Amino acid sequence: MTTPAPSRPSERLDALGVVLPPVPTPLASYLPAVRDGDLVWTAGALPVRSGTLLATGKVGDTVTPEDAADLARVCTLNALAGAAALLPGGIDDVERVVKVVGFVAGTPEFTGQPAVVNGASTLLAEVFGEAGTHARSAVGVAALPLDAPVEVELVLRVR
Image (cartoon, rainbow, N blue to C red; front, side):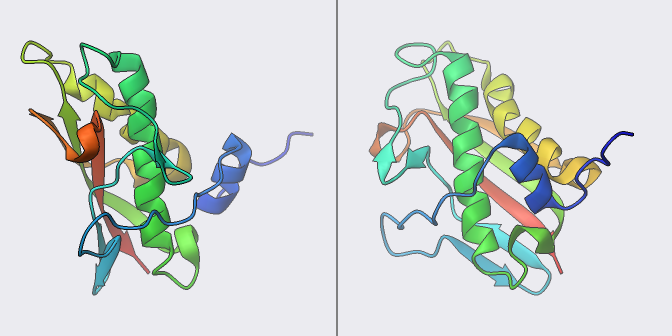
């Protein structure tokens, strides 16, 4: 007899062996996430773990595209943590991922932004299933705060 697949986002995170981190402290004068009606908008989340930026530099130079995709996953977990902190049921109150915006600081010739932001998109599909599919922008930029290689923000529809 097979065990049924996890159905709630929190159960899917557990099955992946992933724990939402504490909400990162904002670097300036803003909130990690804001709820407006049935939408939550997150601030841009950096690849920070335990208060430490996990990498600096440009994708295509000191950061590989594969490492940057992993960092996008960390950014996404940080953004989800900010959103979950606003919701009485935490991450299980997320009904749909509406939009993902990923910013990738790369060398001038780097054009693989979509592959980097796939790190975020893949995680969201793993956690939310069909409700994790979303509209998305993958934007190349010259620099990000603290020389981070990637930043992710989310728009979520919630209960």
